[in-house]
Image (tube, rainbow, N blue to C red; front, side, top):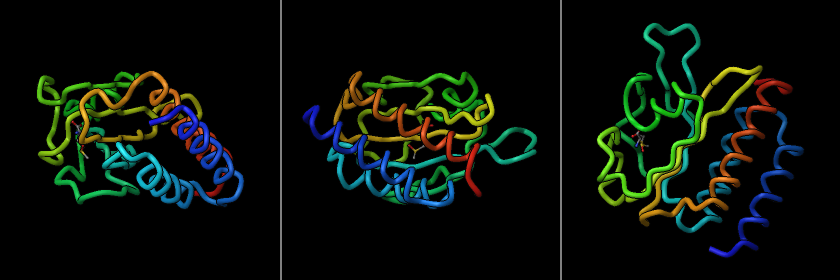
Length: 160
Ligand code: SME
């Protein structure tokens, strides 16, 4: 995947951030763009922290790709739970070597999960799976982190 493609997609999501009125529509449009344009992003979705849930729970939001069995993930489970509970990006180059991994598709080889912050708190995360090992190089991490920041900004400033 060329650096030019990453720049193009970054510009596309920046334009979407301006064009789309609500955070919900923005997340729907973003997963579509990332899934369609980034050929190794084979599953792209948001998980959002359920407000007030005890124990804290990540709930599947907008996504593109095959339906996943993991529609609700407690914070102590999975790579998703690790990213949300630590507030840190998690990149796994080979999911089969990571005991935290919750399988979504047998074809998945690598995964990135980037927390989404609003008003200084984790409110959800952007999760991307690839059928290719080690798909999420530093350039990709930057793009996905940029996308997660845009969503956080939208959640802070727009209607839901
Ligand atoms: N693999 C994730 C679960 C979500 S599916 O990939 C869509 C995890 O380990 O938390």
